[in-house]
Length: 482
Picture 1 (cartoon, rainbow, N blue to C red):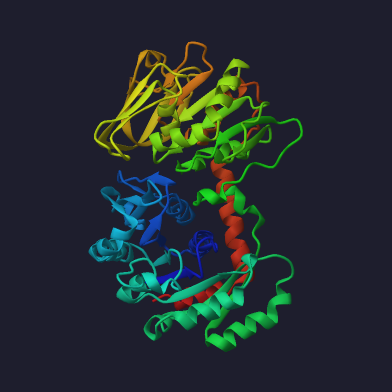
Picture 2 (picture 1 turned 90 degrees about the vertical axis):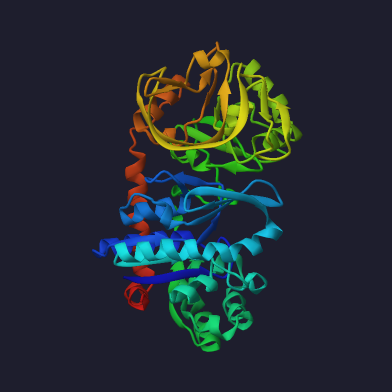
């Protein structure tokens, strides 16, 4: 019943990847290990085996441990709905929506749930590897903290601090973090490591020793850049990458909404040799050569409809459809394809309704009830099974629902236009089903490779563990846990 916490000098330093790799390394040593993140902020969520939702990164870390994800692995999840506020999910269920400035007052009330979940995991596993959030250098947020040092001290968990050398200034990152931390917090730090080094790590020997001398912390190694990281699900929307551009491949374009959610739906397509996945960024036009345009999930359907129109993407979509192109809307993207999205109770923002794109003859009404479930479906067109999950509010109805995209336990799911070229579904994760993905792409005239996407992700996790074993003092890190 031991634990170790990986914190970072900032966001996006690679904490999630480090924890996933260490979890897989521990598992390969025969240790019964589980991941834990007290507080996460992400619209990329996973539905758990116990019917709740957690951050997608913790679901990947659970996979690294050989476990089904459960809500205790991420007891507090913040899902941004606007620039000013976020939905607060506690132990898998929505608690409230709060403005950022009001969340500080709420945090102390959440520490009990965080420690409760942590203790359950500690009681069930030999080792818990904890991921921090943001940085302990954000001392302006220290009061009531449940994500970094506030948690580490409350749970008596030793901390290793990770610095990101790729962004530059890693010496200042680590030495400066110690300088601004209060002594009691700094005393929880048992060591440091350097992540994302490009080139020969020996070139940083002097800097590495300088950090140790200035801080008194033990160094656990320098991790070179892990080239296969892009093959694992990204947690932050800023990290969404297009596929490598392949000669002769067919273009599939995905709109990058301001509140894009569950964007790892795209990962299996990105890995297809016959697909050039293009992420259409704000201010860019939808490529004219795209055969398929995907409208992904969104945490704010009406807000992202306005965002879509502000980019001129509604005009591009209309032209794409006139040229005979295909469109797939997933979850919030599906809702946008209809005639109207109504939110009479103001669940996602100000009450009211917004005209949809009118590409499907459906209408959506937002309701307080949130659907969270894993599902086994059958794709109507191909007859093939699809494994996925639903995580949405709102109900969609209309004539095009009579042509469902899929069926779940005998009920119709989603909608397809009379032409068959406009499709909408609430199913996330559908492209993880290898046979369905191949058939769907074949329907677009795209030849799919004989791939097993899940096995490929497992292989990358093994490679990540081996990478960390080669460059970090993994035995020393595991020996820190208490």
